[in-house]
Length: 526
Length: 108
Image (cartoon, rainbow over all chains, first blue to last red; front, side, top):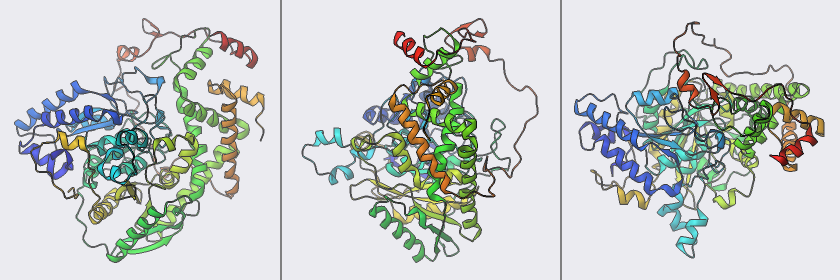
């Protein structure tokens, strides 16, 4: 049906030709959101405003004047982006009830293109975590938990008992966005990526997750975690769609002085047929401890795929990879300590009833508003920033960061165009298993393959590759040179075409989508 | 390094976040132990990196007022306000010391 298509050629064309209207599309997505409520992917569904936006889009199509490819396309946004008139919570008690007075630049840009904002998606509290399990609205469930592919592979006694206890996590922290795209409730979603928060859930949910180069997309309106590493992330069902969304949001923003001033030109991805001029690097340190044999084999097969197609595939070394997590731990907590200082209850957000003094009110507000994970990071960060620790921890970590970034520079300078690595150490684990370890331990383990790209500010993308033995998605990651998104996405698109990742078989989608098109069995999107 | 009670109190004051219990303190100690792995890396002669965009000039716009007049909008999200002021409880009152704090917490 039409819900299952990628955007560019199919749905956009359908909208243009009047085969489906923006209102119909919006209503279908809203209905699907309702019937997949158990996924807990959405914190806020902006039904009224979405339908209004869809109506406006419909008027434009009738006049024959759509704003572009994104006009009328339903999207969702991670709940750490400000959205005018819509609650923005960061999945925290600290911001419950906070109604943004402005749109984040990326949100504004999408709305200016006619995109229809369906709602705000769930995440780990303040984007801290790798499971999307630690927010105040509860954990997000991976749609694949309910797929025919997963159910077929699970050894079950009673169906209902297993569904309740066997569901797997989405990964995080942009789990809600990944689940929303994966379950067809929207065509694209915004996430954020500081240590892998877009690519990790993309891998677990079988969708494309793009982390752009630091400085390409505006962070204005994205509630900051680590100012020197945060980027808005893009989640879609195919690489072409990611390129379209990128084209709509990238570019200099005077409101974010960390966006580069180079002129950004949106691009279409060519259909690569000849990869013989390509040099693919395989960093040996990404064969990390704990990497499942399944993913290792898949990674190896992917390298062979490129080799057999004529590309040059070579092993490379990024020697400081294993320090990126420690480095991140110090820099992240330090920047978090600073960024979280703004939450004092005075201007916005939660405010404690404690009224004896400013300091006691601040302390009580922050105790009541933040969960343990956030509070722990604030305290650690402040420790590393103490005068007696500054040099040995914060400055030291900044030096290690330079070493990590230089590793990449050296490899790219040696003639390698793109790096190919796994995205995660394993497929998605069941929630009951995930919560046995604490947040920091999990983040430490799960971020190892994604974090270094944030350290170096490089663009990276997860491409869904195959299903695991348990019937769950496994993705592989491509890392590119700074600001070379076109090359990165071109290679990713070629790879996507080769692997033909299967479409998720979800009952809820089939039931609702008696759409205009015949349901196509083929998994190729573009 | 052993984290002294003095440092803990100091951190709570700086962060305006409390450790709450022994678990919180343990979490900090584990975090420090973990961070100590940084010592394994030789960083002689390496400059600290503030930003991956260090080779570029930061954009600065003209110091002209281009937007504003949104007082009403901004005040909407504040809980305590009077006319166009955010209202804070009295300042210049230090937080109670650690043991005093325990009793004040019990009271609240």
